Length: 207
Image 1 (cartoon, one colour):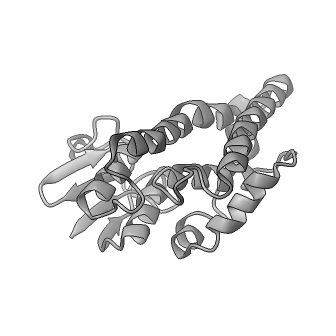
Image 2 (cartoon, helix red, strand yellow):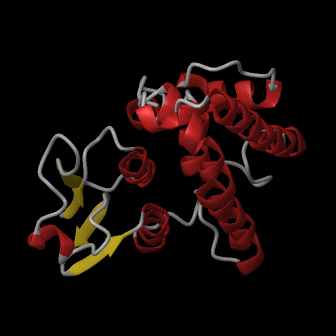
Image 3 (cartoon, helix red, strand yellow):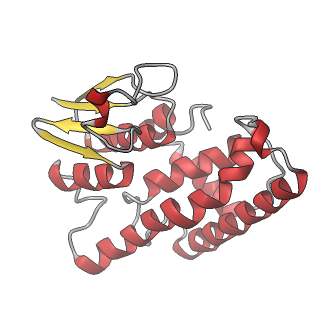
């Protein structure tokens, strides 16, 4: 059985859990990370040299990096209905997964650390204002894409890209800051919330 190493509150672990829910993959999860078993042990570092979660063990195959994991799971476990095989369709999905990991993910770091984690190193008011503005600009990009497709990130319907981006949208709404009015993002949030996997691992009150 697939083993998932990582605490369920981690946004990156929740990507994997939601993907498993969508593809109906049975798994066992073990709590690793802050507050649980340490990822700094030689045992864990032998699996992931970055000492971060999640890590999966699929028989004798070990994989880390959450977006790589969900791509692998969709490819291995018949997830072609939301991770297309056709190269151009897959590339459109991949570009939004990569956008979330690079541009969108970086845009929220300071604001999230300040407003949710209450990090003493992230309490500069000007830096916070700049971070909130940057985060909003990226959410505006997302809003335009959703206006264009009318439903999900891909014009072809729900796809693997909606997992990391859907979790990012949850983080946006759960972080206590002024949220500009992005109607397409709000509608997307409600649309995703009709998916049982999202309610379990996305819109569950955990930013």
